[in-house]
Length: 311
Image 1 (cartoon, rainbow, N blue to C red):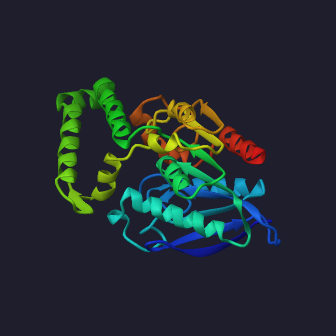
Image 2: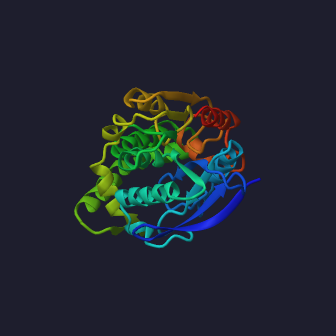
Image 3: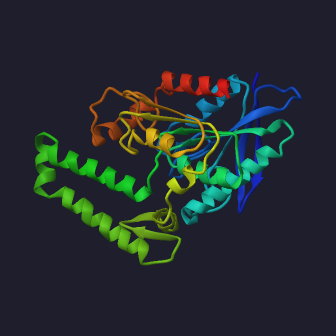
């Protein structure tokens, strides 16, 4: 039996979260704390236009293995207070640290058995959190071991290859208007605008941009923190991840000090689901709406279950 309750955590703003316990007994449980990927997403890793429910699934899985879990709305999202667009990368780290401290002090949690589960950007946040409040293990899903700027440059190269090689009228039109060159120019203009201000938020082409978050990422390198990690780590990537390089799962393992288990799963995407669409940036991104209709890849879930049981 699983018992869930909503809790409020004090950070710079109030963070709203769901605490799940395997049962209502009085014993203390190990705990898994879930740290989101990028974007305005809630405690289940749902965005307005993409309902992933990643953390809802992972919480149920962890509870089945006897772990308590906590998942929280990002600041300024869902029930959490604050302004998402004004928040920087380090603000999200502070929120995660506050959640860890809350869990460690909870009467139903064993403070000596705390684990972090990060997805995407959460895999950049988790090592910094561990540096500030040491935990006993980490699960990093779709992780990266490089600065965000290198990852986004790689994403743009994939997009440009699509524009240069796609068949039919669409491909002809993209090449006619030199869309690949326009993509680079748009990125240069946006980067100049972000660097040219100290404002937390800017507007670009009618869109709100979290400029503070972007500037802080420019000076952040997760490798400085990965090399300090001495607790057990599990990394899992998908071969069809077009948002993070799949081989980064192995790079993380090569950097950390503690024991590290790494897996790269065939046909799995950044959303932790399998797809049969061609391994192209546009094809896989356009297929996201279909992927989220399916549960998380069973092999990935089994790997996480086995690792939790082991630790």
